Length: 126
Image 1 (cartoon, rainbow, N blue to C red):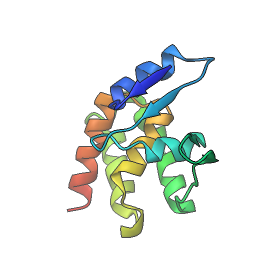
Image 2: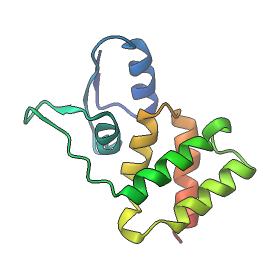
Image 3: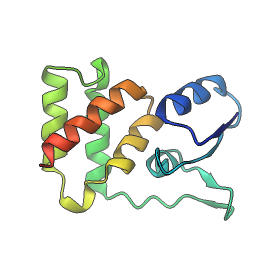
Image 4: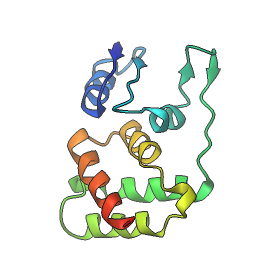
């Protein structure tokens, strides 16, 4: 499955379609996939190397905790508030929305939920 300049919705659908096959993406500036590449240990076809995971241990733990609260797509309530708190507690160096959203996309979060999480991050980081 090849996705050219996909958004998170395209990535989600392509991964489902390629469930037991290969998936390749040509990312766009609008939807960076660096977090997805780190989470999946994706092969960079321009270098032939596995994507280096530069996420800190604290960020990886935060991503796992936020993913746990994705049962309702971070809509109102406990999951959204807890995820917002987790995001707010991140060190400034770990506040990379592209890395966080891409990582959660790789873990199966849907595009609509990721948009809500992006909004929560913006509010948490004001």
